[in-house]
Amino acid sequence: MTADRIQGPAIRVQGLEKSYKQLRVLRGVDFDVARGGIFALLGSNGAGKTTVVRILSTLLKADAGKARVNGFDVATQAADVRESISLTGQFAAVDEILSGRENLVLLARLRHLKDPGRIADDLLERFSLTDAGARKVSTYSGGMRRRLDIAMSLVGDPPVVFLDEPTTGLDPQARIEAWRAVKELAARGTTVLLTTQYLDEAEQLADRIAILHEGRIIVNGTLAELKRLLPPAKVEYVEKQPTLEDVFLTLVGGGGKNGEHGEHGGSGPDAISARTSEERR
Image (cartoon, rainbow, N blue to C red; front, side, top):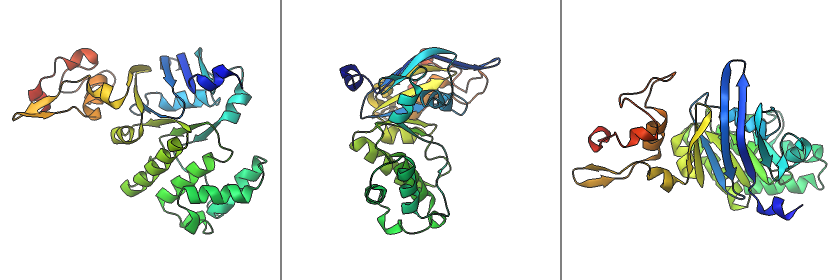
């Protein structure tokens, strides 16, 4: 492994474009993901988040642009990229007939890893599933299934993990369980690229947040940096800091579709200065 691969960003995306006939899904996407952090790609349904993940995981070819994962080019070094990543989709991909431990052991064997039983037991303990390890997955709650699904993504210790809307369809308690699992990944040095449409999820988890809108990254920064895009609102002499929701809705538009804007009559960075504290009250 070269020094550049070790020291460079875990993920680098430059000018990524993708179209489906006349529909331009990605229109020049650029971002870097630092090693060992959680990067949230935030956007509405249809913004292109899953398309980005599918390109980075070598499941889809881009029309233009470049992308590197763990130092490997996704177009010319696809096999190396696949060895460096794990992908967890929107729905848990676990075998309900097997127990949680059997799911993990099976995957470890498929990857030809030594001592699959020990690997399974370590992951069950890591994700607080030891007591349920012998039970069939069909008896698991939604949060437990998601935790098992994330645990399975770590078989083989991939340095980069893609989580594509990992809490879709989960109840509030299950979402919190999944959030704990994601934080555990980053705490142990795994790089996580998380796609989500939930603003609170990005706030809770991400070190950096990029908002994908109409095929482009329109803002990229820490939560504190994004909040500084909006001035604080003052209500009865009490200063109110903008939330990530304020930032997101101001940048992408309040509630319209196909270019229609919400009641504030505009979107994007230029609209920020036009919004008054009275409108946000």
